[in-house]
Amino acid sequence: MKNKVQLGLLLLIAGNLFSALYDVSIKWLPSDTNATTFLLVRQVTSIFILAPLWLWVGKPQPERWGIHFWRANIGALGALGLVIGLMALPLASVSALFYSAPLMIMVLGYLFLKERVTKGQWLCAVLGMVGVLLILKPGSMAFAGGAVLFSALTFAICQLSLRKLSFNDHPILPLMLYNLLALPLAMIMVGIQGVAGLSWQLLLVALVSNVCLLVYHWFCVLAYRQAQAGEIAIAEYSGLIFIVFMGWLLFDEWLDNLAWLGAALVVLPSIFLPQIKKLHQFLLVKAMIRPDIQNINQKH
Picture 1 (cartoon, one colour):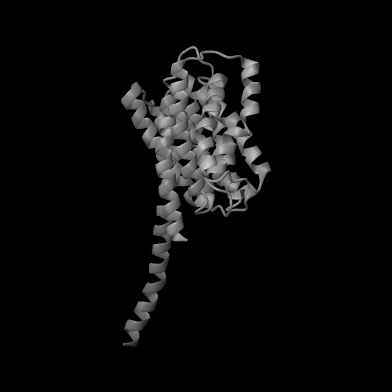
Picture 2: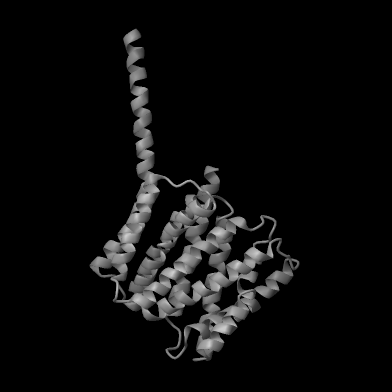
């Protein structure tokens, strides 16, 4: 079990590097592009990328269409929220807000999958929500920030739903159906907002972002098959490190002091909680062993 958890953590860390690259790619969208147009182009190009792979592995079929349909459409709405946030806010701010998702995974895992949550984990969730408010600075970026938080919620739901997929499903299926089954919804959203900014640059960004996103989802599918969501969700925070560094390096973006405090409240409690728990267990064991040693010495 321990080896599976470690493997799940490593897979998620690798996946989050590609997730950070996806966020970076959105910053290179043409200025006249709207979020729904990009989302539709991304969905279509994803299908064209994945279709040959799906054919190559023998055209596997899912056992549970309903879960795939749910994941695809809730994921499309969340993707739209994330694109809106990335187009309006600095990378570091979007990332700090989005990384409230592991806390949401923990809470939703407790509510719907009956996964155990300790008092320390609940404390992390409360501190994380306080951190989100500090990053948001309510009123300063309400709509775009709210869109990112909605995206984080849908992400948490999609990640947890991976636990409900059949283990017999080929890993290519969640990726293929995640894009294919959401295509009608993407077309409806474009019909409402209108097409804007179609260009070769948009297509190139869509292709690059697709590769990054598909690799990320592939790692997630593999990771969440290894262990419970609450055991490995902490690895999602690694993406915050990647994205803050890339935002600084490529776009000269940085968090202000209040946002750094908020990001620390979101990330650090969950990172240090397992270490504190291990130290507490070690001290308890040591305290229990010491009286036994003293009794042995007294007998001799």
